[in-house]
Amino acid sequence: MTTVDTSAAPQPVAAPAPPGAEPTGAAPAAAEQGAPRPGRGRRARRVPTWLLRAASPVALVALWQVGSTTGAVPDRILPAPARILDGAGETLRDGSLVAALQVSSQRAVLGFALGAAVGLLLGLLVGSSRLADLVVDPPLQMLRTIPFLGLIPLFIVWFGIGETPKIGMVALGVSFPLYLNASAAIRQVDPKLLETAQVLRFSAWRRISVVVIPSVLPQVLVGLRQSLGVAWLALIVAERINADAGLGYLINNADQSMRMDLVVFGLILYALLGLSTDGAVRLLERWAVRWRPAVAR
Amino acid sequence: MTAPEATSEETRAGAVRVRGLTKSFDGNQVLHGLDLDIAPGEIVALVGTSGSGKSTLLRVLAGLSRDHTGEVEVPAEQAVAFQEARLFPWRRTLANVLLGVPPGTLPRAEAEQRARDVLAEVGLSHRLTAWPLTLSGGEAQRVALARALVAQPRLLLLDEPFGALDALTRITAQRLLLQLWERHRFGVLLVTHDVHEAVALADRVLVLDGGRLRHEVVVDLPRPREHGSADAAPLAGHLLHHLGLDA
Image (cartoon, rainbow over all chains, first blue to last red):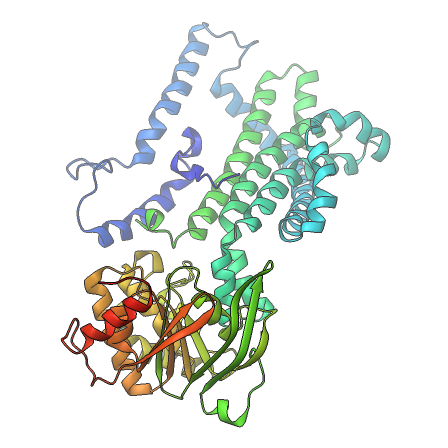
């Protein structure tokens, strides 16, 4: 497993998050470099990249709205953006949106925290101890091949239909990407730097904070982004189990009362939640590798 | 990690004393009952071909190698610099040098002042906040030297410290080392494969061959020594001869 810096290829809809980050990231670079950089644009017309990237999604939504108004896209199949917005306002006014978000976020946070703790801990253990690698890794690799969403029936039998199976699904989905990345990352800590730590007579804590954590951080963050993606996916599926609260409940309800606008709105909410956590980790990634010249530039 | 071996009154003054040092890797004997003395403030160069055991000897003195037999006395106040600068890339220059201050020996402000002073000595006061990966090879090596010297060592162990530098940078770095040595008078064990470097810098040059110290050449020339000077050339030729390379 290698550290792939996916931040180089921002996702299209990520435009709303970067506007604050983009100028701060680029400004010191220009000062440091002096010379204008090719690609980042001629200085004559400086339209920010994020604005350019936002153009096509906005155009698509506009097209969709036009299609709905002219009747080319029937409301039964895909409600108009304006109607979805109306539905959104409705859920906001009657309080169901906030309630659903609270419940779903709590599930996501609890499941994520649990899964991340287990995944990271096992990953670091397996990466740093040969014995743990021999004992712990094989069963985990076997478990990993099971599509975890297929475990829902078992989870219902084991944990009932309350909060536990939902949180458990999220935790399970989250733990594997972090486990894999953390165990790989810790094996790649430069032995020469560890030796230098020895020469400089670092304490165990100093060795961990100065050598190990900064070494593994970039790849662990790659794992974190994968994990967050899986966490939201797991939540969407798990929340449909006997949903009585949360976003899944909101969508289920809308589905049963033929409110397609609310169904679509619920899906958009999941997407926005996923985007915001992804954006947060991307900022964190940028900070974690700020010492790399290619990124500092 | 603690100091490798016992510290006697004598070594507290900064001397190195090695007697009957033997070391094996997987049944291969790398060092054969080796004796070595380095007086306080003396520069000793250790030359040898690849696999002669010179890095192993340095690692034993640095406390990086275990399972050796024999008597090894080194000053506790020692520092090491390697061929690669081995800076922590996620710490800025000043922070890297600060990490060379043994933990708990100095208040933070004092340690930082000392780190700044040492960086000034190696001519890098203008690079305090630079990330290591933005430094040139020569700059990085000077930071590594500063990180070693900030601990105010009595013994400096250098493992081919200039080996990765280009020829001009190397000469500058060698001169810098001598300047620092003249000011602080630490003992030096310089492991190198470059006989000219050895002759230019050292008080004594030892030739290590097959895990044994075969020859010793005392370089009794005034410093600073011109590179390739008429006095140095025969000594270098002599050393090359002992390394099995006749000019």
